[in-house]
Length: 382
Image (cartoon, rainbow, N blue to C red; front, side, top):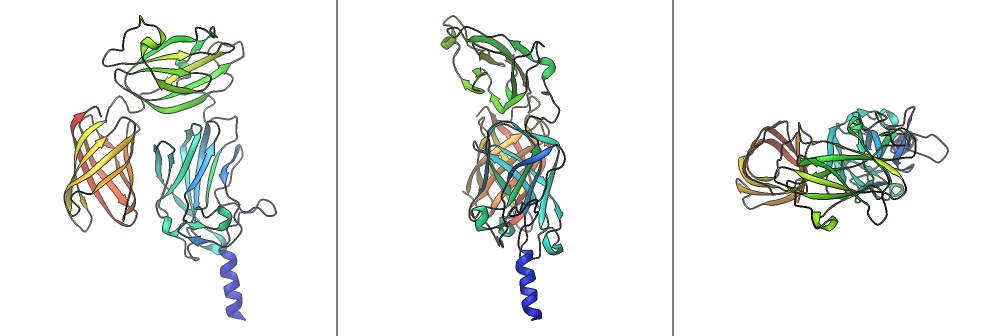
Protein backbone atom coordinates (compact mmCIF):
# COMPACT_ATOMS: atom_id res chain seq x y z
CA UNK A 1 0.00 0.00 0.00
CA UNK A 2 2.84 2.38 0.89
CA UNK A 3 4.59 1.60 -2.41
CA UNK A 4 1.34 2.23 -4.33
CA UNK A 5 0.84 5.57 -2.59
CA UNK A 6 4.43 6.57 -3.44
CA UNK A 7 3.92 5.70 -7.12
CA UNK A 8 0.73 7.71 -7.15
CA UNK A 9 2.58 10.68 -5.62
CA UNK A 10 5.30 10.53 -8.26
CA UNK A 11 2.81 10.40 -11.10
CA UNK A 12 0.88 13.33 -9.72
CA UNK A 13 3.99 15.43 -9.18
CA UNK A 14 4.99 14.90 -12.79
CA UNK A 15 1.95 16.94 -13.78
CA UNK A 16 2.60 20.55 -14.75
CA UNK A 17 0.24 22.49 -12.50
CA UNK A 18 -0.10 26.23 -12.15
CA UNK A 19 -3.87 26.11 -12.28
CA UNK A 20 -5.83 29.29 -12.68
CA UNK A 21 -9.08 27.64 -13.73
CA UNK A 22 -10.50 24.16 -13.98
CA UNK A 23 -8.75 22.23 -16.75
CA UNK A 24 -5.96 24.78 -17.20
CA UNK A 25 -2.44 23.79 -16.16
CA UNK A 26 0.10 26.43 -17.13
CA UNK A 27 3.82 26.34 -16.51
CA UNK A 28 5.54 29.13 -14.60
CA UNK A 29 6.27 32.00 -14.80
CA UNK A 30 2.83 33.48 -14.27
CA UNK A 31 1.85 36.99 -15.37
CA UNK A 32 1.92 39.80 -12.82
CA UNK A 33 -0.27 42.90 -12.86
CA UNK A 34 -0.12 44.57 -16.26
CA UNK A 35 1.17 41.38 -17.89
CA UNK A 36 -0.41 38.51 -19.80
CA UNK A 37 0.55 35.17 -21.28
CA UNK A 38 1.85 35.70 -24.80
CA UNK A 39 2.38 31.95 -25.21
CA UNK A 40 1.71 28.95 -22.98
CA UNK A 41 0.49 25.37 -23.25
CA UNK A 42 -2.10 23.96 -20.86
CA UNK A 43 -0.53 20.62 -19.96
CA UNK A 44 -2.10 18.65 -17.10
CA UNK A 45 -0.82 15.16 -17.99
CA UNK A 46 2.35 13.42 -16.85
CA UNK A 47 5.51 14.50 -18.63
CA UNK A 48 8.52 12.93 -20.32
CA UNK A 49 12.01 14.26 -21.10
CA UNK A 50 13.64 15.37 -24.37
CA UNK A 51 10.82 16.74 -26.57
CA UNK A 52 10.86 15.49 -30.18
CA UNK A 53 9.32 18.70 -31.57
CA UNK A 54 10.51 22.34 -31.31
CA UNK A 55 8.52 24.80 -29.21
CA UNK A 56 7.34 27.49 -31.62
CA UNK A 57 5.04 30.48 -31.15
CA UNK A 58 3.84 33.33 -33.35
CA UNK A 59 2.96 36.92 -32.46
CA UNK A 60 0.90 38.98 -34.88
CA UNK A 61 2.26 42.33 -33.74
CA UNK A 62 5.11 43.80 -31.67
CA UNK A 63 5.15 42.59 -28.06
CA UNK A 64 7.22 43.50 -25.02
CA UNK A 65 8.44 40.28 -23.35
CA UNK A 66 9.19 40.32 -19.62
CA UNK A 67 9.68 36.64 -18.64
CA UNK A 68 10.44 33.33 -20.32
CA UNK A 69 10.18 29.90 -18.71
CA UNK A 70 10.71 26.22 -19.44
CA UNK A 71 9.85 23.11 -17.39
CA UNK A 72 12.38 20.47 -16.21
CA UNK A 73 10.58 18.06 -13.86
CA UNK A 74 13.12 15.40 -14.87
CA UNK A 75 11.73 12.37 -12.99
CA UNK A 76 11.28 14.43 -9.79
CA UNK A 77 14.94 15.51 -9.66
CA UNK A 78 14.81 18.87 -11.47
CA UNK A 79 17.88 20.22 -13.25
CA UNK A 80 20.42 22.96 -12.53
CA UNK A 81 19.17 25.98 -14.52
CA UNK A 82 20.91 26.66 -17.79
CA UNK A 83 20.06 29.23 -20.44
CA UNK A 84 16.98 30.06 -22.49
CA UNK A 85 17.01 31.94 -25.79
CA UNK A 86 14.78 32.69 -28.75
CA UNK A 87 15.36 32.30 -32.48
CA UNK A 88 13.24 34.01 -35.13
CA UNK A 89 12.22 32.65 -38.53
CA UNK A 90 15.22 34.33 -40.20
CA UNK A 91 17.68 32.68 -37.84
CA UNK A 92 18.34 35.74 -35.66
CA UNK A 93 18.91 34.81 -32.02
CA UNK A 94 17.84 36.64 -28.87
CA UNK A 95 19.83 35.79 -25.76
CA UNK A 96 20.53 33.25 -24.49
CA UNK A 97 19.89 34.41 -20.92
CA UNK A 98 20.79 32.64 -17.70
CA UNK A 99 17.70 31.20 -16.02
CA UNK A 100 16.98 30.89 -12.31
CA UNK A 101 15.26 27.92 -10.74
CA UNK A 102 11.92 27.60 -8.94
CA UNK A 103 10.26 24.68 -7.18
CA UNK A 104 7.91 22.41 -9.10
CA UNK A 105 5.16 20.12 -7.92
CA UNK A 106 6.07 18.09 -4.84
CA UNK A 107 8.84 20.55 -3.98
CA UNK A 108 11.11 19.40 -6.82
CA UNK A 109 13.96 21.95 -6.92
CA UNK A 110 14.78 23.71 -10.18
CA UNK A 111 11.83 22.16 -11.99
CA UNK A 112 10.97 25.55 -13.43
CA UNK A 113 13.61 27.55 -15.29
CA UNK A 114 12.73 31.24 -15.45
CA UNK A 115 14.37 34.20 -17.15
CA UNK A 116 13.40 37.63 -15.85
CA UNK A 117 14.18 40.10 -18.63
CA UNK A 118 15.43 43.48 -17.43
CA UNK A 119 15.21 45.52 -19.52
CA UNK A 120 12.23 43.89 -21.19
CA UNK A 121 12.64 42.54 -24.73
CA UNK A 122 10.72 44.20 -27.58
CA UNK A 123 9.95 41.60 -30.24
CA UNK A 124 8.58 42.43 -33.69
CA UNK A 125 5.77 40.38 -35.19
CA UNK A 126 6.94 36.96 -36.34
CA UNK A 127 7.45 33.31 -35.49
CA UNK A 128 9.92 32.32 -32.77
CA UNK A 129 11.43 29.10 -31.40
CA UNK A 130 12.30 28.70 -27.71
CA UNK A 131 15.89 27.43 -27.34
CA UNK A 132 16.60 25.56 -24.10
CA UNK A 133 20.23 24.72 -23.26
CA UNK A 134 19.35 21.24 -21.94
CA UNK A 135 16.60 19.62 -24.02
CA UNK A 136 17.49 16.20 -22.58
CA UNK A 137 15.72 17.17 -19.33
CA UNK A 138 13.14 19.54 -20.85
CA UNK A 139 9.63 18.23 -20.14
CA UNK A 140 6.92 17.59 -22.71
CA UNK A 141 3.58 15.82 -23.01
CA UNK A 142 1.08 14.94 -25.69
CA UNK A 143 -0.92 17.97 -24.50
CA UNK A 144 1.95 20.22 -25.58
CA UNK A 145 2.00 18.50 -29.00
CA UNK A 146 5.23 16.76 -27.98
CA UNK A 147 6.93 20.18 -27.75
CA UNK A 148 8.96 21.34 -24.78
CA UNK A 149 6.73 23.01 -22.21
CA UNK A 150 7.36 26.74 -22.08
CA UNK A 151 5.81 30.03 -21.15
CA UNK A 152 6.25 33.52 -22.59
CA UNK A 153 5.02 36.45 -20.49
CA UNK A 154 4.71 39.99 -21.79
CA UNK A 155 3.15 43.33 -21.06
CA UNK A 156 -0.58 43.38 -21.69
CA UNK A 157 -1.33 44.11 -25.34
CA UNK A 158 -1.39 47.80 -26.10
CA UNK A 159 1.31 48.55 -23.53
CA UNK A 160 5.04 48.99 -24.21
CA UNK A 161 8.00 48.90 -21.89
CA UNK A 162 8.56 52.65 -21.99
CA UNK A 163 5.36 53.93 -23.60
CA UNK A 164 7.50 55.44 -26.33
CA UNK A 165 10.11 54.55 -28.91
CA UNK A 166 13.74 54.95 -27.77
CA UNK A 167 14.25 57.28 -30.75
CA UNK A 168 10.94 59.16 -30.34
CA UNK A 169 12.71 62.51 -29.93
CA UNK A 170 14.06 62.09 -33.47
CA UNK A 171 10.73 60.95 -34.95
CA UNK A 172 9.72 62.56 -38.25
CA UNK A 173 6.07 63.14 -39.11
CA UNK A 174 5.14 62.22 -42.70
CA UNK A 175 1.87 63.48 -44.17
CA UNK A 176 -0.20 61.36 -46.57
CA UNK A 177 0.90 61.37 -50.20
CA UNK A 178 -0.82 60.74 -53.50
CA UNK A 179 -1.34 57.08 -54.35
CA UNK A 180 0.35 57.77 -57.70
CA UNK A 181 3.39 59.39 -56.06
CA UNK A 182 3.82 57.68 -52.67
CA UNK A 183 7.58 58.00 -52.17
CA UNK A 184 9.42 60.49 -49.97
CA UNK A 185 13.08 60.80 -49.07
CA UNK A 186 14.13 59.54 -45.66
CA UNK A 187 17.40 59.61 -43.74
CA UNK A 188 20.98 58.96 -44.78
CA UNK A 189 22.29 56.64 -42.08
CA UNK A 190 25.55 55.15 -40.93
CA UNK A 191 25.62 51.49 -42.04
CA UNK A 192 24.63 49.05 -39.30
CA UNK A 193 21.68 47.31 -37.66
CA UNK A 194 18.61 49.38 -36.78
CA UNK A 195 15.19 49.03 -35.22
CA UNK A 196 12.66 50.97 -37.28
CA UNK A 197 9.95 52.47 -35.06
CA UNK A 198 6.77 53.67 -36.73
CA UNK A 199 3.15 54.46 -36.02
CA UNK A 200 0.03 55.88 -37.60
CA UNK A 201 -0.97 59.34 -36.38
CA UNK A 202 -4.66 60.20 -36.33
CA UNK A 203 -4.38 62.75 -33.49
CA UNK A 204 -3.43 66.39 -33.75
CA UNK A 205 -0.08 66.16 -31.94
CA UNK A 206 2.58 66.29 -34.68
CA UNK A 207 5.27 63.66 -34.15
CA UNK A 208 3.21 61.56 -31.73
CA UNK A 209 1.71 58.38 -33.23
CA UNK A 210 -1.34 56.64 -31.82
CA UNK A 211 0.91 53.70 -30.91
CA UNK A 212 4.55 52.91 -31.56
CA UNK A 213 5.41 49.62 -33.30
CA UNK A 214 8.82 48.30 -34.31
CA UNK A 215 10.42 46.32 -37.12
CA UNK A 216 13.92 44.93 -36.77
CA UNK A 217 16.69 44.65 -36.16
CA UNK A 218 17.34 45.32 -39.87
CA UNK A 219 20.79 45.40 -41.46
CA UNK A 220 21.45 48.53 -43.54
CA UNK A 221 24.54 47.85 -45.63
CA UNK A 222 27.24 50.26 -46.71
CA UNK A 223 26.10 51.89 -49.97
CA UNK A 224 22.65 50.28 -49.74
CA UNK A 225 19.36 51.87 -50.84
CA UNK A 226 16.12 50.84 -49.14
CA UNK A 227 12.40 51.54 -49.16
CA UNK A 228 10.32 51.26 -45.97
CA UNK A 229 6.59 50.81 -46.59
CA UNK A 230 4.85 52.37 -43.58
CA UNK A 231 1.53 50.62 -44.23
CA UNK A 232 2.84 47.06 -44.60
CA UNK A 233 5.73 47.74 -42.17
CA UNK A 234 8.25 46.15 -44.54
CA UNK A 235 11.77 47.13 -45.55
CA UNK A 236 13.05 46.16 -48.99
CA UNK A 237 16.29 46.75 -50.85
CA UNK A 238 15.81 48.77 -54.04
CA UNK A 239 17.57 51.09 -56.48
CA UNK A 240 17.21 54.89 -56.47
CA UNK A 241 16.28 54.78 -60.16
CA UNK A 242 13.19 52.74 -59.30
CA UNK A 243 11.81 55.89 -57.69
CA UNK A 244 13.32 58.52 -59.96
CA UNK A 245 15.71 57.97 -62.90
CA UNK A 246 17.52 61.14 -61.91
CA UNK A 247 18.50 59.89 -58.44
CA UNK A 248 22.09 58.79 -57.89
CA UNK A 249 23.34 55.80 -55.94
CA UNK A 250 24.31 56.21 -52.25
CA UNK A 251 27.95 56.98 -51.57
CA UNK A 252 30.27 54.66 -49.67
CA UNK A 253 29.88 55.13 -45.94
CA UNK A 254 26.12 55.65 -45.94
CA UNK A 255 22.85 53.75 -46.24
CA UNK A 256 19.84 55.61 -47.66
CA UNK A 257 16.21 54.96 -46.78
CA UNK A 258 13.14 56.29 -48.61
CA UNK A 259 9.55 55.83 -47.52
CA UNK A 260 6.48 54.55 -49.30
CA UNK A 261 3.77 56.52 -47.51
CA UNK A 262 0.07 56.07 -46.97
CA UNK A 263 -2.43 57.92 -49.15
CA UNK A 264 -4.82 58.25 -46.19
CA UNK A 265 -2.95 58.62 -42.88
CA UNK A 266 0.04 60.43 -41.47
CA UNK A 267 2.85 58.28 -40.04
CA UNK A 268 5.70 58.97 -37.63
CA UNK A 269 9.01 57.12 -38.13
CA UNK A 270 12.36 57.04 -36.33
CA UNK A 271 15.45 54.83 -36.45
CA UNK A 272 17.05 53.32 -33.33
CA UNK A 273 20.69 52.57 -33.95
CA UNK A 274 23.14 51.62 -35.13
CA UNK A 275 22.59 48.83 -32.61
CA UNK A 276 26.10 47.50 -33.12
CA UNK A 277 27.64 50.74 -31.87
CA UNK A 278 28.88 51.54 -35.35
CA UNK A 279 31.09 48.44 -35.56
CA UNK A 280 30.72 46.34 -38.68
CA UNK A 281 31.79 42.83 -37.77
CA UNK A 282 30.75 41.21 -41.05
CA UNK A 283 33.71 39.62 -42.82
CA UNK A 284 36.29 36.84 -42.49
CA UNK A 285 37.96 36.05 -39.18
CA UNK A 286 40.64 33.68 -37.90
CA UNK A 287 39.60 32.01 -34.65
CA UNK A 288 41.59 30.13 -32.03
CA UNK A 289 40.59 28.58 -28.76
CA UNK A 290 40.77 25.76 -26.24
CA UNK A 291 38.20 23.10 -25.33
CA UNK A 292 38.28 22.30 -21.62
CA UNK A 293 39.97 18.98 -20.92
CA UNK A 294 40.82 18.43 -24.58
CA UNK A 295 42.84 20.39 -27.11
CA UNK A 296 43.63 23.73 -28.67
CA UNK A 297 41.99 24.42 -32.03
CA UNK A 298 41.85 26.97 -34.86
CA UNK A 299 39.06 27.79 -37.30
CA UNK A 300 38.01 30.06 -40.15
CA UNK A 301 34.90 32.12 -39.40
CA UNK A 302 32.79 34.07 -41.89
CA UNK A 303 30.23 36.50 -40.47
CA UNK A 304 27.74 37.48 -43.17
CA UNK A 305 25.76 40.71 -43.33
CA UNK A 306 22.47 38.81 -43.23
CA UNK A 307 23.25 37.52 -39.72
CA UNK A 308 24.33 34.02 -40.77
CA UNK A 309 27.78 32.50 -40.31
CA UNK A 310 30.04 29.71 -41.56
CA UNK A 311 32.69 28.07 -39.36
CA UNK A 312 35.37 25.58 -40.46
CA UNK A 313 37.92 23.96 -38.13
CA UNK A 314 41.43 24.22 -39.59
CA UNK A 315 43.55 22.81 -36.74
CA UNK A 316 42.59 20.47 -33.89
CA UNK A 317 40.78 17.19 -33.32
CA UNK A 318 38.10 17.78 -35.98
CA UNK A 319 39.92 19.38 -38.90
CA UNK A 320 37.48 20.02 -41.74
CA UNK A 321 34.39 20.10 -39.52
CA UNK A 322 31.96 22.75 -40.81
CA UNK A 323 29.10 24.51 -39.08
CA UNK A 324 26.45 26.99 -40.18
CA UNK A 325 24.60 29.22 -37.76
CA UNK A 326 23.71 32.77 -36.81
CA UNK A 327 25.39 35.72 -35.14
CA UNK A 328 24.41 39.05 -33.62
CA UNK A 329 26.12 42.03 -31.99
CA UNK A 330 24.25 44.37 -29.64
CA UNK A 331 27.02 47.02 -29.34
CA UNK A 332 28.58 45.31 -26.30
CA UNK A 333 28.29 41.54 -26.79
CA UNK A 334 28.78 39.32 -29.83
CA UNK A 335 26.91 36.00 -29.82
CA UNK A 336 27.40 33.08 -32.22
CA UNK A 337 25.06 30.08 -32.27
CA UNK A 338 24.68 26.81 -34.15
CA UNK A 339 23.72 23.18 -33.62
CA UNK A 340 26.49 20.58 -33.91
CA UNK A 341 25.61 17.03 -35.07
CA UNK A 342 26.91 15.41 -31.88
CA UNK A 343 27.41 18.34 -29.52
CA UNK A 344 23.96 19.88 -29.82
CA UNK A 345 23.24 23.58 -29.21
CA UNK A 346 26.46 25.62 -29.10
CA UNK A 347 26.73 29.27 -27.98
CA UNK A 348 29.77 31.54 -28.26
CA UNK A 349 29.89 34.87 -26.42
CA UNK A 350 32.39 37.71 -26.04
CA UNK A 351 32.07 41.20 -24.59
CA UNK A 352 35.57 42.27 -25.62
CA UNK A 353 34.93 43.40 -29.18
CA UNK A 354 36.70 45.90 -31.44
CA UNK A 355 36.57 46.48 -35.21
CA UNK A 356 39.37 43.95 -35.84
CA UNK A 357 39.56 41.67 -32.80
CA UNK A 358 37.36 39.64 -30.46
CA UNK A 359 38.94 38.42 -27.23
CA UNK A 360 38.16 36.80 -23.85
CA UNK A 361 35.34 34.77 -25.39
CA UNK A 362 33.73 31.68 -23.89
CA UNK A 363 31.55 28.97 -25.40
CA UNK A 364 29.19 26.28 -24.15
CA UNK A 365 28.24 23.02 -25.86
CA UNK A 366 25.07 21.15 -24.94
CA UNK A 367 26.58 17.64 -24.92
CA UNK A 368 30.31 18.34 -24.56
CA UNK A 369 32.75 20.54 -22.63
CA UNK A 370 32.92 24.22 -23.55
CA UNK A 371 35.95 26.44 -23.62
CA UNK A 372 37.50 29.78 -24.53
CA UNK A 373 38.04 31.56 -27.86
CA UNK A 374 39.25 34.69 -29.62
CA UNK A 375 39.33 35.96 -33.20
CA UNK A 376 41.24 38.35 -35.49
CA UNK A 377 39.75 39.96 -38.58
CA UNK A 378 41.06 38.97 -42.00
CA UNK A 379 38.71 40.58 -44.54
CA UNK A 380 35.76 42.97 -44.16
CA UNK A 381 32.45 43.11 -45.92
CA UNK A 382 30.81 39.70 -46.44
